[in-house]
Image (cartoon, rainbow, N blue to C red; front, side, top):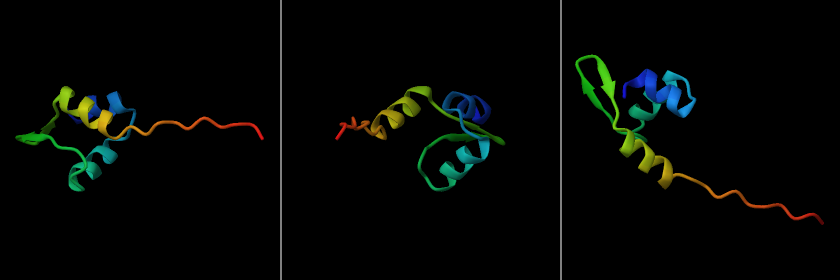
Amino acid sequence: MDTDELAKYLKLEKQTIYNWLHQKKISGIKVGHVWRFDRKAIDQWLSSHMIEAKTRTKE
């Protein structure tokens, strides 16, 4: 997938994707002028960064 597809997939702005690439939060391969991303690698990255929601208890 390319940057546009990844931004849509993650529901983020393209600039966020570029920022994460620069910060090395995600990895991709640049082919010419286009960044490419492996969906399986992105899904694994998402899984490793998930935070469990804590349930609130009423007091």
